[in-house]
Length: 476
Image (cartoon, rainbow, N blue to C red; front, side, top):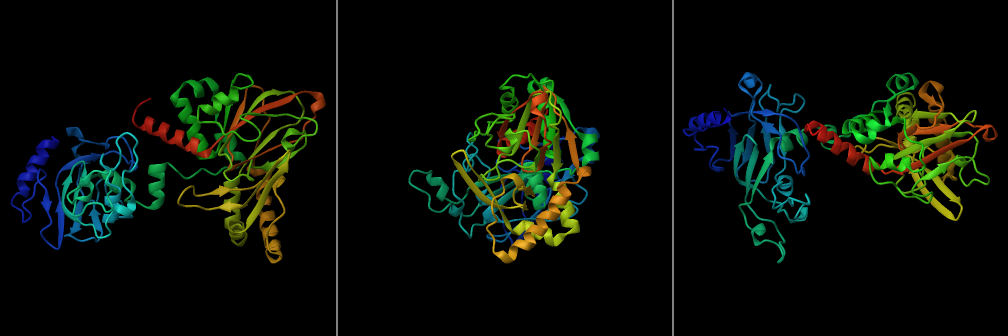
């Protein structure tokens, strides 16, 4: 069906002023040319630029012909380094209501050519530097195809070394850009691009009521032994930042097995794994029976871990209830009700340190971090590990006021979720989002022993993206 459509389109196009077809290159013969191919394909999804996967286009069966889409209109100026514009037909799957025209820079396109000569086929890494692309590079010819836009370049790369292929310096390099790359990923808004290529979807904020309804208790066997169980847990962590595993063997190192299902463990000065129980002369408040307020771990390090796992091995004491709070929800409330305090916590650094047991760690970071180029939001809050502020005296009153208002939201019971861990249960939570705490307990009336470990955020994101991608591709 597709071949027939292409053949008919090519015949119709032979009489045009451009004398073009899908089988031959299209020289640019005028100051500005427009190409509109009447072929039809089905659009099925988006992928990042350096993907090793084939493009995700396919022809549709006859009964779905009404859902097929005319290819976009491409506008290119002859031998010019001006931007290229693409206009998907309105009503097609390519079309975006908020952005009917996609504009792409020729330098960017040449720099990100996805061909095997530019992206190594096995390492998936670039084989040239961005600085090698000529600043006046232009398109000498092009073809609009069902699988994407093919461009032929007017110049080769600059500064090609003796160890590189001489052809890199010559004009005529051909690049084929899948539509899903130039329209689906990079043709949308920045937030759409992040959501589609990095899967940084907007988190779901929660309070006590929402978490009681949405809390995920995932059977350990399902989590460990099935891809769907793992995907379910990772997706819930991405959305809510908190899950619980149940029916987990109460073996000393089982928490490491659970963590390595996601990625490598983060080894710190606490060890590969560590014990949370009351001990004499503790070097950390977590190793006492005292009340431990809501906080995040290791904020005195340059890169605090992204996930924390705490596995209950024993718990027969009165007290010791675990408390969780979505710090992103507190940020939203502060921003809406006290925007001036929100801005102070975004711009004023707080001090975190650990100076004990032959260790001295120190790091200054703002309480609220908004970084739209990566994760939209990160929170740094850990009162037990706060050091003396390193601020001018005139900034301190405003900071303390803002921090107090933020803490008022954090301490609201209606925004907290509570659970007393039972042996064989394991909490898994996002350390840079979900605050955790523990009420005091009486160690003379029983035993309380949790085993913990960390996983870096990069490991979680890696596993979440690849597992989600495998699910989309029907691999499980």
